[in-house]
Amino acid sequence: PLVGLLIDRFGVRVPITIGVACLVAGFGSLAAMSEAWHFVAANLLLGPGFAGVAMLPITIAVTVRVQDRTALAIGLVSAGASLGALVLAPTLQALIETRGWRATYLTLGVAVVLVPLGLLWALPKGRLQRSAPGEAPAAKPPPLDLRRELRRPGVLPLGLLLIVPGLVNFGFQ
Image (cartoon, rainbow, N blue to C red; front, side):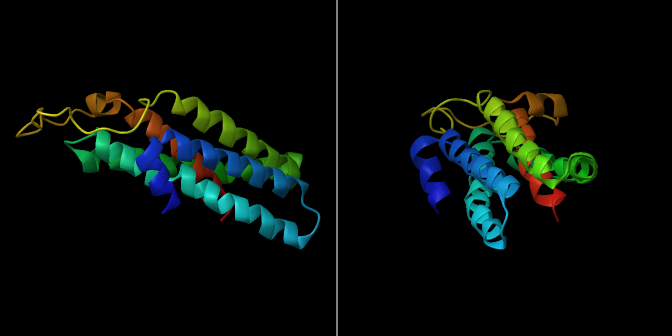
């Protein structure tokens, strides 16, 4: 509910930025943990972090910005999470084997700052708005053109943004 309230009030940038900060603190805590309770404490930061970065803000952004072929746009964006899971599992395994688990958590902490915050600046600024008042939606959407759909404002950055939670979430399971 808190992420939804933040999105309604400020747009998607604020909850994603707060989520990134929680993820960084959580992964930093994991890298420094020395007792079992540290793991629990770090996950108290990771939970809200994933909530702020993952599906809810991105789905809302796509739903509001893409009024025709909304399901296709959400599907394209959601594919980022699956791509993240596919890429991260072997990458994390290699990092753990070569650099250790602490360095791997630190690497994830850096990645969750660089990737999402960089992509946030490609999104439209401010609160999300539907079509301008008086602007009627098209009666019939034009034929499907995947390149055109990916060029819609915010769709590609949102899809790439979802790679990070997918990488992290599925990479450790």
